Length: 279
Image (cartoon, rainbow, N blue to C red; front, side, top):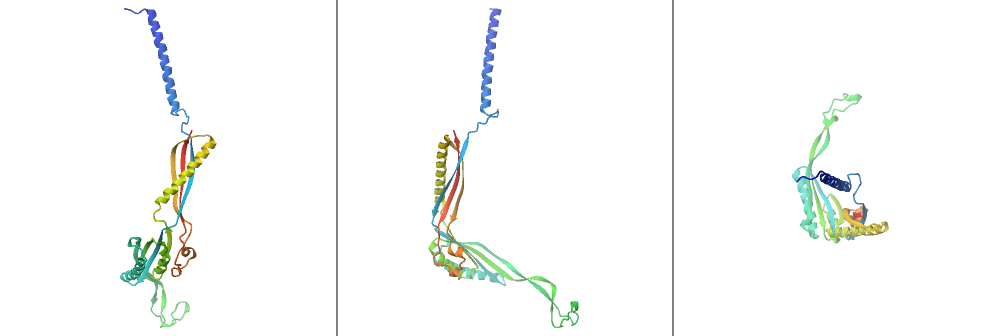
């Protein structure tokens, strides 16, 4: 059955209108997606705000680190090393007598090196009247030639040792004792906290609480709401020693070290920065 020409025209008009409606619909959808993805230049990144916080924890040091070097000279390597060994034994016997465990005594470096001395060459005597620039030289008097050379005169052996003292009340006595054993360089004590992780975590928590408190106050003042945290960073967590020992600050020699050395307090600090989204 053939469709009348008039009906064909009506069907065509309906289809044409439907095509226009669908085209407009999809055009609106595409424009909306483009705008949403900021392809037209509109920035849709969420607004953020950052807050910093600081936290500190103090504690009395429970360990002390001492450093010393043993140096000995001799004409042979074996002799220099033997000299170091004699002093090292005295130092180790003293440390063990003071209750320092073997695990807390560590050799950091052991070495030896040759020692040289520059010597001018002595030339043979010359006859009287033959000296340079009219200088008369006695036939029995030697004179020095202008050039010389390096001469090996022996060897130096050296050993560096680090000691961790857990009973800090013994530090003064240990320093005094080591000063009498013949060690070359004696440095310390450097007071520290043996296990700082717990204190670091406590300082970090205080810093985070400080930053959160600032965030809540400022958000209220600005009339905004805080969203999720977008970033977090931390710095610090370094021990700060407020008090130095009298030996270190006053330059007292080991032999005159006090029996008790003030330990002071160490401070573990943490600084954090927290960034929030705001709505």
